[in-house]
Image 1 (cartoon, rainbow, N blue to C red):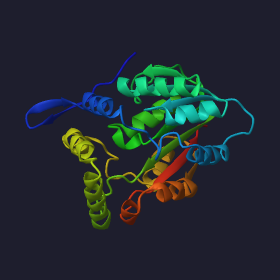
Image 2: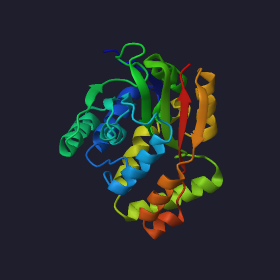
Image 3: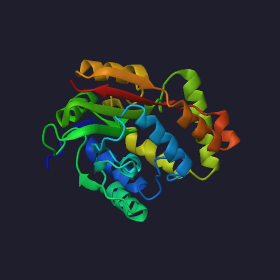
Image 4: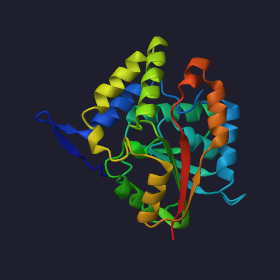
Length: 264
């Protein structure tokens, strides 16, 4: 399969952005859950209810989870009875997704590959989904067009993300306070390695600081998707907030959302 390689010059040294990203998520794969508790049944039920509102009831779909990570979305859709394929740049994440699928007795097809250069034929899927992916991409508009390529006419894209690195002063201060709390909770190692990994490449990621429901909705429209819609995922956010300790809720800073669009 073809994986596009993007490099940049940082301090006189060429850095392979894809390699940096893959290496970081390989490292994080052993501890990352992609959910508050990973497999909390109540949380999974809330996610399913949100998806079901936008899908034709009773129809078995071919679903592609781009940037599947540990398989959170892929396994949700498999539980809902759909045929699911997952792809990720990180081999460590794919190994974790396979273990999760085996533990849950679910079958999903997993591929190592690039969200911006998919190894699938045109019009192969009914639905393309991703979670916390768009902010990591160097060419998000190219990626969305690639997702459309593998969609059947009338197929849908569901993109979930959050305003993780909003540069506005109030958000920045809350983020710093939240990171301080996490460091006291012995998560400092992950924060330090994340910053060391992404600092040299963050300016090459257009949505790193600029991701929002409005920016993604506009991106979808500009790349030819129709019937775009914003779901603020209020039920999911309420669940997650209630599961966080009080100190973390006090400085909660991220608003996740789901943007959907349809291929003509």
